[in-house]
Image (cartoon, rainbow, N blue to C red; front, side, top):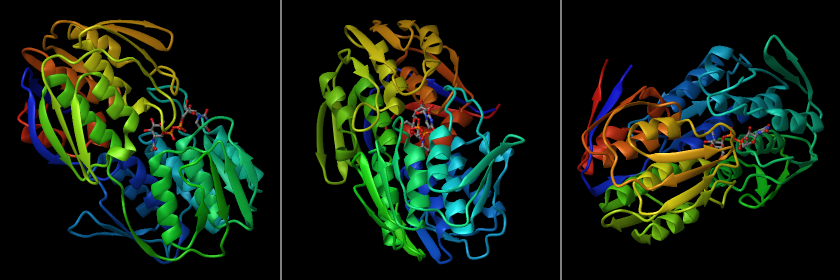
Length: 418
Ligand code: UD1
């Protein structure tokens, strides 16, 4: 298993390009199932989760070709297999995103239940409840969700809680259903908007994306389209947090500040100076950041996917911060690892109290999930001495070329193949 070896204590400086968003690319690739035409998806990040999704789609009979500009061309004209097997779903929960499209286009789907994962239970009851309301018959047997429907019917669905992939699954299913679907208490995440825009380019009739109430008029067929995936706001936020924690000045290109206002507000509160244009963000920071409180919640509030990175920043900040995680239970596994680097953190339930330490010192730490790993990398960039982050495969799921990008910003970081 690969590790990242970081010699910390160097302020980040320089410019890099932000990749396409993982969490937008994954549902958009699944939207390819909804049409017999061809869907060209541009700005697809080169990540392990994307490879897993393409493997799953290929196994189903999707024709996948790649072009030299990070473009993926999909054709589901000859899709023959409607099964998402356990072996793939267990490595990536987002595989559940094939459920809605398979059911809507072919009237049948068998998708393994994702099971528990490192950051909590993460059930899929809202996906199932919504599809049943639209007329699907769903049974669970041998660990698989088996869904059938001759044709889905439009429905008014109110989510019990805000779910991103739940909203995306039902939006894709409703695009090919009979009649009108209204999704209330829907996720407002920018990735949902990006998917809706791709579906509309394919001929869907979706309005209200980006609000809590999405309206989908079902159509008989969807056609091919070409769509460019939005920039990754979590990758953007991760590099900004890293620069704010280490000090320095970075310029992120292909980045959109409007996608991460809650994060940028917190970085300003931490003392960073931020400027932006339509497709760039510049951050300048000097000395130690100031502590910032944060409470995670669905978009547009502070994202759970940035919690670990800010925990690292707060670990070296001036003052004491309170961070509360309201989206996932059990998403503080990086705390014990940060403590090994010298952080002073106490956890009580879903709240962490972080007393900024004067300095962290390098150690070997273990990554437990994707964003926790990003937090550990930030801590390693600040810590004196050498930090080794083990189990880098978590990072490879969601960060394209992270060590190359950080090296470009002047960090001393390398991959060690064990
Ligand atoms: C998506 C993101 C992930 C992010 C998360 C929250 C993708 C591929 N992943 O994950 O990076 O951390 O949003 O912003 O887009 N829940 C239920 N029942 C359901 C569905 C969800 O109880 O049917 C709960 C979950 O356990 C969790 C909360 O709702 O506590 C939010 O989960 P959800 O928004 O569904 O997360 P994902 O879509 O899996």
